[in-house]
Amino acid sequence: MFDSLSDRLGKTIKNLRGQGRLSEDNIKETLREVRMALLEADVALPVVKQLIDSVREKAMGQEVIGSLSPGQAFVKVVNDELVAVMGDNAEPLNLATQPPAVVMMAGLQGAGKTTTVGKLARLLQERDKKKVMVVSCDVYRPAAIKQLETLADSVNAIFFASSVDQSPVQIAKAALAEARKQFVDVLLVDTAGRLAIDEQMMDEIKQLHSAINPIETLFVVDSMTGQDAANTAKAFGDALPLTGVVLTKTDGDARGGAALSVRVVTGKPIKFIGAGEKTDALETFHPERIASRILGMGDVVSLVEEVTAKVDHAKAEKFATKMKKGKNFDFNDLKDQLEQMANMGGMASIMEKMPGMGDVPDAVKAKMGDDKQFVHMIALVNSMTPQERRFPAILKGSRKKRIAAGAGLQVQDLNKLVKQHQTMARTMKKMSKGGMAKMMRAMQGKMPPGMGGPGGMGGPGGMR
Picture 1 (cartoon, helix red, strand yellow):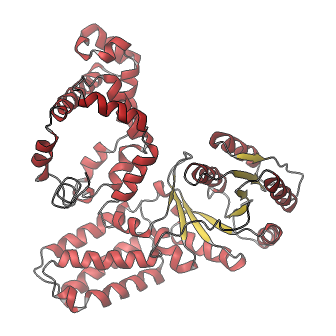
Picture 2 (spheres, helix red, strand yellow):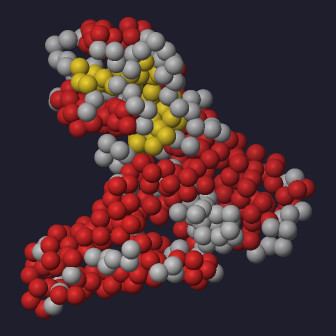
Picture 3 (cartoon, helix red, strand yellow):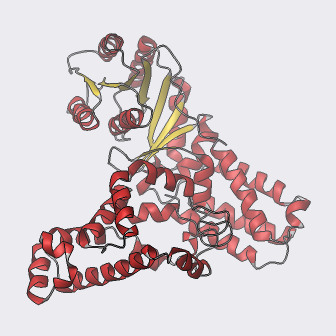
């Protein structure tokens, strides 16, 4: 998400860094570039105008023009205005009501409502420790009810059964009664989508809304439709008292126009963004973190949260103890590390949140972010015997041929893996002998700004 916008803004701001001071002329030129970048990212025209006007007004202020670091001063202004456009702060779900808190999903067909219900059920159970029930009021789409039942089963949510011969209002009322009986905290109601906004659809969803009176009515919209997403959300908002928006399929949206337009066009906050099919691929929408990603400054807070939530801490602790004792780093350890990274969305997802990645060439990013390598590496380790995993030194000719064939790969792929393992093993050995501090000092000058320099992840005052 935001790849093209980030690249364009990154180049524009880099040009400013060469200027001694900001002047009206170079601000004017930069703003023209920023406007083009936003329009190409499919941001709605009124939003582009509002953002550019605000940036111009603040950038022309004396404290920015007189700044000794024009690029940084301008980045701060753009960052602040991007945050303001997207809604200043994250707005969580409002569940402050007599249980069950009813959350209703609305949206067009194919936007990802049913998948989002499954993701949200998992998030509420794992993060907020809520007892969640889900129900489908979609009596038109074949297999919609079955799809939700399968999702509910995969995330361990309570599924309320419904059938196509019932009316949506009947289903919703029955589910609400059952949720009260079972002392459920949150009832998630999936509704039918249509291919376009029509009167019949709006009448039905209005009836459904008044029958169950949800505390949250979320509009689920496909971010890849760009500014159309914001316009559709506005049309729904005119008919229904929406409380927020969920942007789906953001992993396939390189432009990000919807994320920048929805808040201004609809007046409703974006509450969540979905990035992928997996049930853990739903994030709370934090405007300030998204602005940082757009400007290529990374999103360390989200990265740390993701590590905390998705890393197997028992395995991590065991691995740390093993390394402290100076024990050998074997292929079992390598496989564990690869699986942990895959669990966090793969290398591409991690890189998107790392500071300084904007300065890394695209070819290098593409190579680093190729998650097929993870799959191949894990397949090679799986093809080894327990003895081969524990004692990598015994991997010779015939064994290598058998392992590569078992993984459906070439011997040179295994040789690459062995080389990477040897490099990591040497690094781990140095760390176990107290070489970590030396390594950090050596790396400090080579890391991008904000990662290894003073105040960065490895510098004084940074993350430890």
